[in-house]
Amino acid sequence: MIIIGELINGTRSKVKEAIAGRDADCIAGLAVKQAEAGADFIDCNPGTVGEQEAKDMQWLVETIQAATDKPISFDSPNPQAVQRGLEMYTGEAMPMINSVTAEPGSVEKMLPIVLEAKVNVVALALGEAGMPTQGGQREEVARQLIDRLVDGGIAASQIFVDPIISPLSTSPEACLHILQAIGAIREYCPECHITCGLSNISFGLPNRRLMNRAFIGLAMQAGMDSAVVDPLDQKIMAHIVVIEALLGQDEFCMNYIQAHRAGKLDV
Amino acid sequence: MIIIGELINGTRSKVKEAIAGRDADCIAGLAVKQAEAGADFIDCNPGTVGEQEAKDMQWLVETIQAATDKPISFDSPNPQAVQRGLEMYTGEAMPMINSVTAEPGSVEKMLPIVLEAKVNVVALALGEAGMPTQGGQREEVARQLIDRLVDGGIAASQIFVDPIISPLSTSPEACLHILQAIGAIREYCPECHITCGLSNISFGLPNRRLMNRAFIGLAMQAGMDSAVVDPLDQKIMAHIVVIEALLGQDEFCMNYIQAHRAGKLDV
Image 1 (cartoon, rainbow over the protein chains, first blue to last red):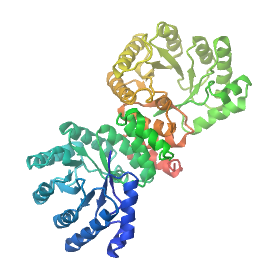
Image 2: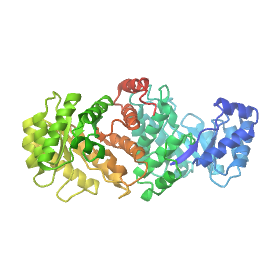
Image 3: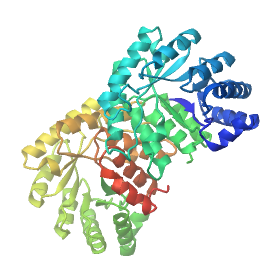
């Protein structure tokens, strides 16, 4: 699993304050803790707008990469902010842009940046018709996005398709639709990655973390190989280790045994 | 999910002592606790042999049904012990025999009992060739068993197919083979139940309960609708409630919300 650590997000009040007050220790601490806990990418979402967002992105990127060499996921719909982040990025590992959608103009605005910088890109299955409600709609929009990005010169292995999780509280079939879409996308493009903002599944319900980790196992079984999660949540990280072992992605359970010895499975 | 509570099993040392010493309070307590925790069947395995097993089965059945009206699963390869259990059974709900196999003579010995008593029957995918190692072998033996039982006059809905879980520690593909077999059996016989002795998956590995509950989610997604588990393990019972909600088996998440309100999801 490719883990995108979600904690540096300006919509969280503590992070919003840290960005506004340029509290580098707070941001660096969140970056280091997520890297140590197993994040493969550090998501970076300033949560502001316009020129302020570009300034905040610049400061966040400088702060994060002074603390860890994990690649950054530049998380903003604002091409100016993403571009600023990329300009500041000095890491060796290929970073990520989150995201392009199938909404009018999105691919056109972001594609030149993605091609120029050779980055991974999250392709959010958000079409002109708005939020998808059926599995079939998700896979149709995802296929269109994959085709446009590949036709534009992006390698399939740089694409992280996000089928968009709908809350189970709004539809009893929300999870089934997502699992169906993940399976169809995996079949359509075996080289792509499939990711998601996991916690949407439990929106509006109690015991959200319990549901999030139960869901991640089902999604991995369907073909998902990445997720935006809180890597400091030891229970979900342990669950991912176990599911990888069960799905034959951890030969001889070496990683499972290692996690056990490190006490990471005592959750 | 149809939960078969596994705790009254003479191979467990505490239960072995209780059976030998005719400690009715211990056995009745285990029966009541499992029923209260959500067991649909109370498994009853004397763990002895020959005429002694028949005597122990008789005492266990009398003791269990004095404590709860949940149906009993008569768990023994010994037709004499199973027959004795059935003779003592006074419950209204259809009990269960665990098990028949595809080994020579097994179906022939048990089928008359199953037909006479109109009971559910666990069909263990254990063929003449011994333990299955590949998904394909499991489903082949399971198909043969289903056909023989149905031809013999048993309704498909009375059959609980057990594809036999192999430990992940012996093969990195053990879980994948099981999931494939579950899917194939579900497709072959939609009316059958599919059950398993869950804890085999984690045999020889640490953090077994963590792995057992991660596995049960994957197996349920593949089509399993029953399991032999410890219903006093609150974490696995909570996980089952969440997976049922995710898989659309709990409309409007009513059972999930109810379990939350009862504090059963705070694990």
